[in-house]
Length: 446
Image 1 (tube, rainbow, N blue to C red):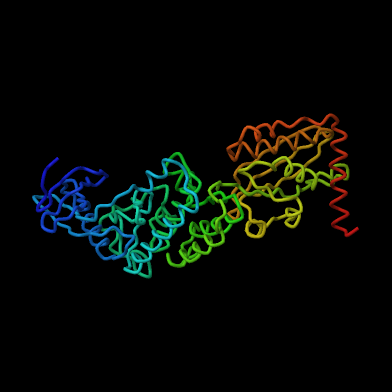
Image 2 (image 1 turned 90 degrees about the vertical axis):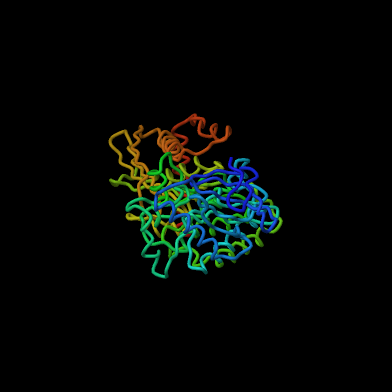
């Protein structure tokens, strides 16, 4: 390690990243300890431009939750940024020890939102919100690394934004990138809000909201899939709505400003009060709609509602799966379901739709698991069983749903998938017919 950089005396290396190395240093002129970020020697104009962009963007913002810049310069061909030396650890290191409870995460989120509000007021968007760029100190949170920060205008990103970015190359960290970043579309404050929403979701659950084994899979999830809802104590509902709004696909559907998101976050924290909300987990919300009969058949008509009710009952009890009741599903009984309305009114992520066709002494059920509100088919299955073995249809559908969702199952939940086969198939059929009669009597007001 070199000993000096201009009038700064380098004491020890404290970190290293893609662009350079960070040292603890002594400022001999002012007699204070600081951090020096030394950029790797490069003749690449884009790398040098990124360095100056980071320095200018950070220097424009004066906020207690933004790491302060003291000096920037070049000595013997080496570019450097002198900044405050922080005590603590990055959020990424904290998350390695497990998810963060809401009581701990609240001050972190509000601090970062305050930093973003100050940044956005200077018409700058960060573009790289991720745990390693959030530093936790004993005195509060600090937002770091403005290397990807760019000016923006009301109509979107600065028109010169791609001067230092090759055409077609997206910029950011895949796990937290917004749809507009993936599509190389104009960005603004809503871009940082999306990334922060993804970051907070992961901090609470320990799982990314948009998962994938490759950047292509993460991109697809960010563009077309919804993060699983959060389940837990009642206080979690407000946090769930807040994070899903922050991660809305369209920028205009997110919070208009970081300050607006902070205000709602404070309300959610007040609603939580002293409740224990550390046990937050993702949950998939599902509703099973009544099946359609492809051909009139009085003998099997009872299965339209009863089979849907039986599948619903088979799926209850899983911590990571929330299934709406058959009564809620009956409201959306239609030849052409309105998936957008179902997503909103039933508050679900997935809808199971299906049809029943009898052929002799056999029944064939075709079912589709549809993601809403987009209406994208996640899988399609066809199951055939004898007319006198309705349980086989119900059991097969329930197993396929659980397997297709890759639900994390506890031991007792795995056992619930191994249900005992009814001793009498005829008795089970009569039970389902009785359910059908119950629906009809309530529906008619009898």
